Length: 435
Image (cartoon, rainbow, N blue to C red; front, side):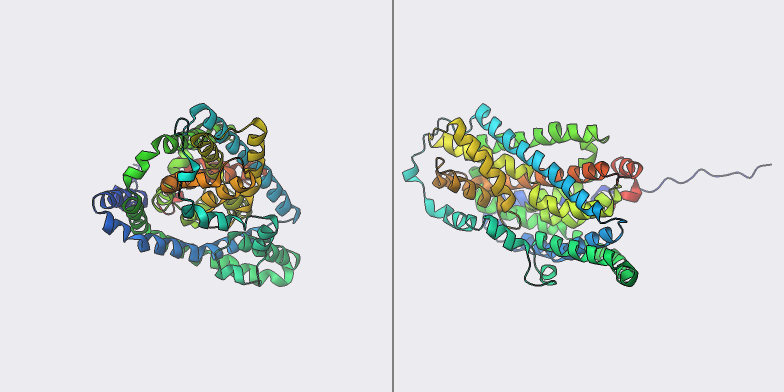
């Protein structure tokens, strides 16, 4: 007689309120309500959002450094590093340019600024003066100086992603070249990854507080009325970004054998955090961990994600050309085809030079308009009031674009575990790290 066996007990599901994504969503809604009904209190909560973003930035340097160094040290050939980097840059260049073209086309079709007939002389140009001054740093010389750190260790105590990337690649290559003697160092860095990511998990538990404070501040300071004044521009941008993600990036995902909607669901906690804080950097450490859990090679994740945060800014690029043409339309500035081509070319360069610059979207727009004098820089005052509302969409689009890029480059380079990817996107409990 066979012994009776009881059916396996299904894993217990956590109640929804214990999921980080649900907590962040509730915090965002609470922040909007507080900022709307008690704007003074909402505006005073800015330190909560700033403090959380600062906490996350504190751990970004070690996460990037350890991931890249251990990833490169695990490669059998150094040529693999250059191959992955070149593939990533080719992908970034193509889709960044495509995003600029999409913004240009939508501006022509929708014409959000047509009929406003704004007189430039009546605009308060002092409100955009600070951004114009910062845009002067977006030169090739300034960009190169921005990448090279003062010392070998200074990037680890700063917040410049490109400098961390630069030092990590150099150190990873050095470890590979001295592998026999450097093996104890490699083992130590591998061991350090676990506690560093544990710190990430601990900090992410504070995400609802940061999202609540940041959203309460945004609504309390700028108000929903400011959004309504330029709703056509904001709505056009949101719809364009949504179509770019679902149609263009969705097609790319489909060609690579995965669903963009499932990827968005997999990253829902991080996306809600980006929405609440208007900063894609707040979810960078978590993104790197989740992409590894989803089957992307560690070396690919280490190179593509940090580089993409500086060079693969799809949302920012859509915003730049759409906003530039909005200003031209609103101020009755006629742009010829050659003016628009020049605008596109300048935007391609200035968007790359914005790496590591805080408030890059608005500053890069100022740099672009300064080089293309046909579009008045003073017209940026028209969109300053709603730029904060568009920054969330820029950050979300940039974030999703970098997640897709990581999977594509990993597959392109043969560093993608497709079974792990499907398990993650289908909701396997083993891969849900921070949700």
